[in-house]
Image: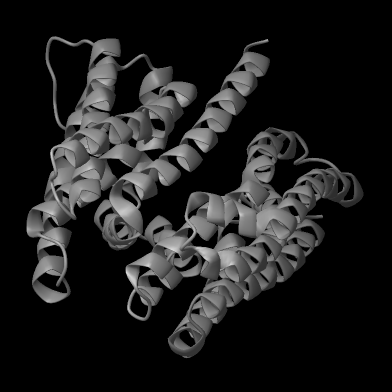
Length: 400
């Protein structure tokens, strides 16, 4: 019964967060304008890369460590991990922000970068602490529901007070700071202790490399594109990237729930195991096809309803939706590989896909702009699926 309630709660939070993500995106565009939204997109893209480097895979270690402390009812350990995570976030983020500001930056202030990276590192780490303590739904709700609502409220106030072109960046930073404060307060209240310590989360190079590969495939195109198109077109392309998530909305849920099934099938025959994996892949693919069909038919209407200046993103949106058809099945395969302890296979798949993506971005984006970005990403997703499908069958065969 608890699992059913947890599933219903998880689906409910994810559905509400998806609606909020779309609404907040449209609202930001209406309040800050297409240029302001383009500036926001570039800021978030730059900060996201800095965050990956600054957190160094420590968020994954926090989940494991917090889970151990939770099972032991070790509140002192949880609070110490929280304190250490906060210290780690400030120190690592400060170092990365200073290096980027001095070497690469020419558009954002040092304070904007530092705050963005600190909260960007802190949120997934604190979320990891909560997830390790079995507070999955609350962790999702704070990040995916509380933060966008606060950002909308803050942005409204800042536009009203005329904070200028950086209003949306300030709103993002302040909403993220408040989100971190809620995480800290929630964890502290649940784990009251008379004494406290500091436990620094352990970085993980392998996790960092996997995260960088994911960034190369799904976010590097936006960063490179920002050098060749204006902020309006950059914002339009990002809108297309956000709307295409409709294709993988259901597959993400299917992949998360499938992990439990895959763990229980570790001792089954090759045929039984693959049949179960293919069954989940079929569900994910069918749902993705329906969403892709919707986008192919209504893509222009969806974009113009957001802004009539985003029509250039129509073709990229259609291309990306096709690429995510492959991604919908890859998610299931990756879940199966992770549950079989085949992390290196997942890394190999992403590495091969990243090579094709990066090559396409560098060679074709300067000339073909958004179409090249979408096409390169879609080709990379198709290649990742092919390699992942081969790795899945090979791993099952070799384990027999």
